Length: 275
Image (cartoon, rainbow, N blue to C red; front, side):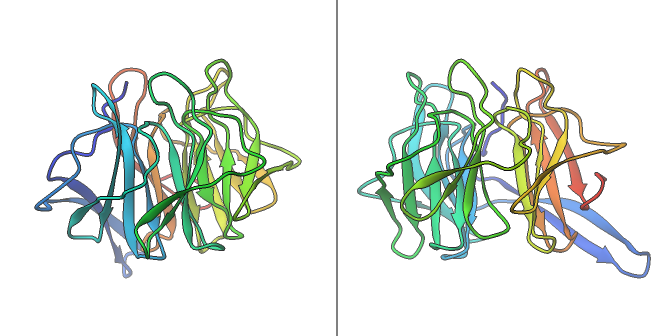
């Protein structure tokens, strides 16, 4: 299991400062020290909640047990949310913000015994979790990819069901999941990194775990997936983190497991190449 941990009293932040005269950008990581932090864990679910303008973190695995605690981060301070109702403990679930419903959607994961297929909604204004009962649902999987697509909906792709890596794609409409059928889909995989470039209205996905080679880059414009031909790309990683950086005008990929030593390299997808 890769050591992809949120450290106690530590979070890393990426600062990109443009050097306009040189036409380049310099990138630096800075370490910050909140007074309180989530306990160390791997395979947590985390995303930015536009409704509350805070980062939400849920669950994960601390080396001995699966977790179901909820934390929010305002850029300075971590705060644990004492939710009376919360999703059951799990790791390797995924969450993403739905701009249409203004809710964060949680799906999937693994609790140590079974692969999960339940769907939960997080309301950043009321700080409450709600379990939904959709008529249709993606397969129960660990390590699905959830992301806010260019149309504002939350889409789900892939994951591992205990036997096979999946290559199906689904979209949340506020009360139910519907399966999507693009002309082409990425190769089946789980635990890939996905980030969304809001300037280009494009999602980018890289790496993951798979039976067939996952060392490739795919982009999605809301209708069509495209396999990108890249001369240079990051090393193979799974469970890496990807997020859009408006200063760099690109999706930043950091870290991940690699089957041996974990990676700590930083890459940026410009829309046509990795740097």
